[in-house]
Image 1 (cartoon, rainbow, N blue to C red):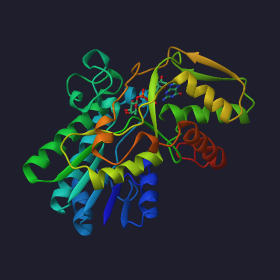
Image 2 (image 1 turned 135 degrees about the horizontal axis):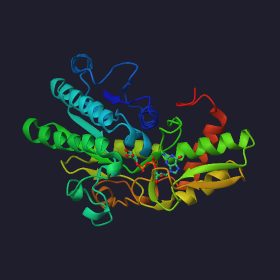
Image 3 (image 1 turned 90 degrees about the horizontal axis):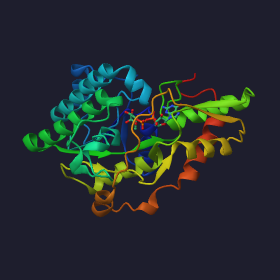
Image 4 (image 1 turned 90 degrees about the vertical axis):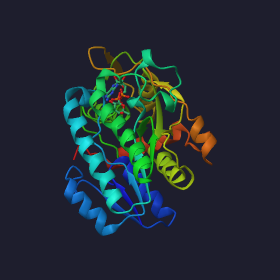
Length: 314
Ligand code: GFB
């Protein structure tokens, strides 16, 4: 049986749906079922289910401002969660665990050569805007490697870039850019507001990957990849925030003014990654990613139909 932590999050829902589609038995765990920061409770639940595979998606996550406001919480909660899960896997004789990091964990631009490749993960400090979260995820990669070497645990880390999709978190000021902008544009439209405010100057570049594609890649990694080297799994097409805003306005048919507020946090300028290790080590191909325009349209349509009953609003 496969256990999925973070099963009610955006990526968790996509993975649980994908496992169901391919007929795999799985146990979805969310924070409502178990507080993974509770070491003993986590050990008990894993020991009672003895999962042969664990997809470790649970984490305290948030957008650039949420990270800047609470670096201590992001570090502490994720360190507790990750140690509980890794030790529970050992005690439950789990065969394989696939854990999720993020490209924001990499060092900032002055320390690395772009595109970001896996061997550069620890060559310098992460960007200051999310150092608490970033170091907690780097420690997960270290713990993963250490437990593989000492205990023979088949522990693999994957590194997606900026994710988006249905069932994301749309909480004001806390969410990532795509859900934040979808909410801003939709609410400006239904409230007949003449403008929306975007953080920064629109120039930062980001790579985006659809949650449903990441769910499929997680299963490809489970079946086809087993090495201590973490693997970048995102679609590597960079887009400016400005281009994203315009696409969302077009998709939601909003023609108000776009105001850029440069006093708001912008995080890194860019964090381009290489997915050549993924493409060379597994059957996944670049053409397998959902075209961005379709994925964004699906997400906007889902939001329009679900509003306001979405996470972070109701
Ligand atoms: O998605 P985001 O918060 O995450 O911001 P990061 C991406 C870019 O979008 C930044 C701009 O340059 C923001 O300035 N942006 C524009 C906005 N308007 C908005 C808005 O209304 N809300 C938000 N949130 N952004 C995160 C890390 O960094 O990357 C996390 O902090 C995580 O830990 C995630 O790893 C993948 O890409 O800047």
